[in-house]
Image (cartoon, rainbow, N blue to C red; front, top):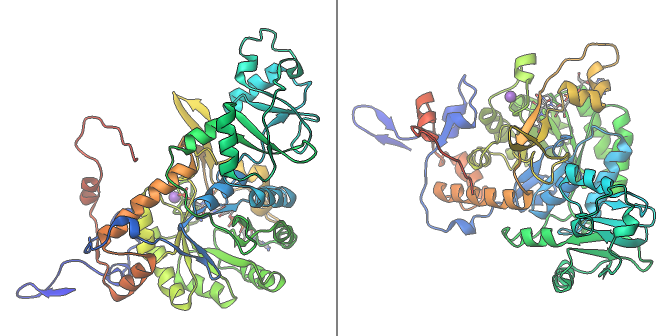
Length: 507
Ligand SMILES: NC(=O)C1=CN([C@@H]2O[C@H](COP(=O)(O)OP(=O)(O)OC[C@H]3O[C@@H](n4cnc5c(N)ncnc54)[C@H](O)[C@@H]3O)[C@@H](O)[C@H]2O)C=CC1
Ligand SMILES: O=c1[nH]c(=O)c2[nH+]cn([C@@H]3O[C@H](COP(=O)(O)O)[C@@H](O)[C@H]3O)c2[nH]1
Ligand SMILES: [K+]
């Protein structure tokens, strides 16, 4: 790229190796990529990429194993858009294995765990459900659970004018039901629901027991979303689902349960993955469950990465302290600017065929473009996906804004829920927070958010003249992707500035 600009060598743009091989730690916002040459439309950009040695994703996006980000619904939605979700482990091994099992057995578009009540429940129970969940359509089954005989349905139309809210739902429920047979395809079930003019279509088995549900409101909303494309499927033909485990003795049993539940890949979830504990767990997991890919981390430097690769890890999770809720750099003085961390680890790991997940610090599609062009194969997101409909927890209002809770897994609140033993250690009685607990705005459905975001990423790749992630990899190592470090003023210029007021609509 060096050009002769006169008396001395003059350069218009720098290769990643020039920028990151220095004493500074940079993050995504510090860097700006230079445009390349466009000779293809954005639609043809191929973002398929490796998650780990044996798993390829159509969409290079991964949801973080956090208890305000990934449980069953998120895992299903992430697989539905061609990515993958990692179910958190701030729970009992049985609870986590059940989440994995449920996610794997779900069909995209259907509600697999519809809320059911027993006939003796009162209308006021539906009121409180509405306040918590935002909907008031409920299936009434014999014993109030799923896989129990369907007796009726209650929707808001059945209860709007019931003045005595202690009335039992048995008295008001609709019993004239339209149902479909369990296993009916999404297209066929949709046709039945539309024709019936009802708001719900329960799918029932031969015994009349509820298996799944299709909702008119979901169908209506889905019709405004982009086409989903092929979901991520495992070799088992079911949705691809990941999960996190720790590195303690008890995590070996947890891992066993997850494997029984059908998990396709696991992440060893640590802030500092370069440890004897993690090396032992990788060796154990690869030996005990050779068919399951094991992703190690977190790491932020090539020497940490090398240690885990040497013991047979199938993928690396990169990022220390870069997360929106992370306080690790403040508390422990370790970490790295995320762009540097991604570039330095991927530079070493990609040579030996180990894919890198850029974890933390993603707050817009530009950050995803930067992560993928600096060597990451996929990105992991917490805050970006928290606040979606598929994230765990209910919405609530604060100052007129619809929010959900989002918290670090090292926050005192998350520790209090389940990870006490990790933080208290075996001897210490002092609990130190390495994260915060807060809120994030409602972001709608993952089924809309991720496809739109990925289209923006494709436009970024087009601007760079890169038709695929593998093309980006080649261009990065030859120094054909040029970039620069931005000054503070350049960063301000690159954002919205000088306006009295504005509203930022992303899509
Ligand atoms: N990416 C990041 O920058 C950070 C992420 N986090 C998140 O917070 C959560 C907790 O992370 P960590 O604190 O690293 O959890 P951890 O469970 O890996 O470590 C907690 C403590 O237990 C120790 N430990 C682990 N295995 C052990 C064993 N077999 N025997 C004895 N001691 C053992 C560790 O060395 C550490 O002192 C994770 O979800 C992690 O992703 C937390 C801080 C930073
Ligand atoms: O220092 C930390 N303290 C915490 O309590 C914590 N919880 C999660 N994580 C990490 O942050 C990532 C998510 O970051 P984003 O919200 O920026 O996507 C996650 O994927 C994790 O790597 C933590 N880091
Ligand atoms: K941080």
